Length: 310
Image 1 (spheres, rainbow, N blue to C red):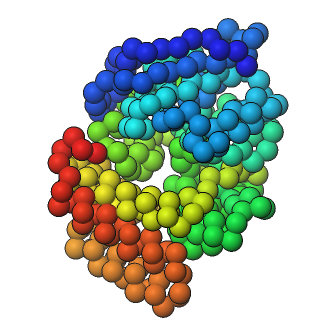
Image 2: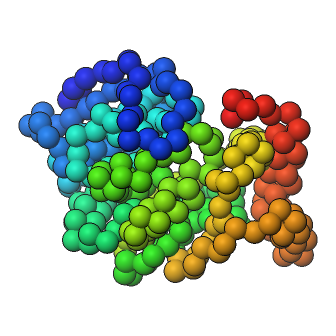
């Protein structure tokens, strides 16, 4: 892998439907020595170019992939994930866009090769993700969190399935489709995946999970970081509900499950209360804790956050 270029200006992003401000970080572009026009552009948003050591490990895994026709765009320093990805896409040269979170771990050395092969052979696919499972050496805490919380894991599938569990930690898009739907929504700090999936489906394409492929995208490793994450998640969800309620969409928890229509606020409140009581009865302690922390963050955010704070 060879350093190709460093961009400090903010890309203009003319294709973006919901644009928000200027990117003020740095974008590093890395390519193979022999590649001028890569087939895929891998975009990795990161705040500090390290993520507790996860990012260097991810870059090493990419370097060891059987598929070599790629470039990497490290988008460094922008806390708004949607804007970071859009900036990367604006500079990307590949026919396909791949997104990884900076703490993603790849499940196999042929993951990219198989992802590209399948999406190339299925023109109806607009976004494809993979399963997310805990690694064999996961700690008891991490494994319990992933077992108890909905959407923290997704099982490996044996065929291409339509699924709402395709997500940014590992996803592939044809670049033309991504640009055609207006890219990521930069206005919202949370809820990017539901928005993007909905726009791709509106454009007439499928959102799927690919067979026999997986990653490890883990929750925080300690209880303290777990608490911080869910409190912040609640605050950012409040921000979206308060200022951009039109972008609040429903989620599913299993493959092949149809995404429901948007519920009213009273229905959402009663559903949330019901989940808390159900979690109490089933003794899913970490799920219960996440719900309480999320609610505390939501109330705090709804009361105190102002537009532009997100």
